[in-house]
Image (cartoon, rainbow, N blue to C red):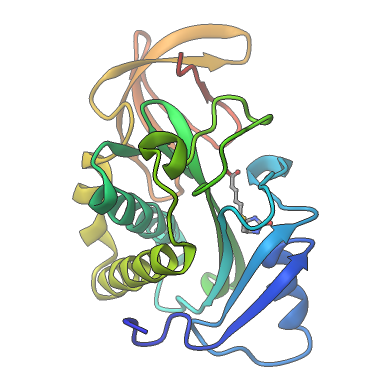
Length: 247
Ligand code: BTN
């Protein structure tokens, strides 16, 4: 294992409703060390952001969750954890083949197609963080996607079947590196994050309620809201307010 703490204790399950939910239930019954992980071949109720479902064919992809205790992060720096996780995924994928980018707030894209999603669930105490459950779904060897139709996988992009264990090790090494970076200085991940962010300093098409228009991303504020230029001035967008129109 090339990590110092991440993934040193791992539970592997053939099937589970959701690796995030599994950790949520487990912490009610035992203390978990930082870096504890759950990896599965198949989820029966894989969860995505804003109540979406995460579909993944059995045994083809990476599906895992990590238990972290970033208690050193103030609640208004929380989004830097999301940034570090997205960056870790993009770095691990770009080492494999260049061209991956981050779509705010939690997707990894290649050529406007989604290859991975991140679901971070935080438990807050007062103004601090008690723990975070970081869930990752990364499409690796799956070839057919019924939902969402514009999804892709490493196999679809390269035509080469990947060793899931090797890829997991690379992703974990990156995750730990970025996590340490955020721990030392939360803001330090921002330049790298912006350099991989879809639509950063570029005009891109979005749908806001029933209106299609263009925005140019200027950054992400401390609450994780997207700051973007529009033809009517600067705006801050919450999670559910925008849909990027990729095609
Ligand atoms: C999204 O794109 O909306 C986020 C998807 C996150 C999916 C992963 S798969 C492993 C972990 N367990 C879950 O139920 N969800 C996350």
